[in-house]
Image (cartoon, rainbow, N blue to C red; front, top):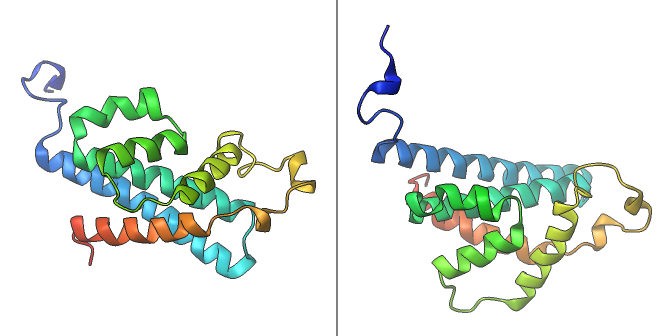
Length: 159
């Protein structure tokens, strides 16, 4: 049996391996986003919809950063961005300057991030009796994600 630990070059992804890994990550984020939209069609805007939306956004933004520069971001994502949508968006904007970036989108994502980071979208919480999920803004985020998926579907040749 070969001990791969000692073979030269084993353990580091090839360029093709990186592309496959990043594309797979993007597809997973896209699946969460599509699941959110299907759930929204069935049950309306509720906490699980918002959780899936945020999860999809997080993964798509991270895959976009990895697609831009895998070596730069592979460890940075784990150590600095973690599951923080604000940080993911800020890093994305720095890497991909958007000409007419809507400050209302930043505000909306910050608001979603407060719920997302405190697990209020994932688990049943006491706050649910005070905050109707239909009052949590997400329309700008949905539009932003539509633009992202259109862009990355082309990059990953999914269209």
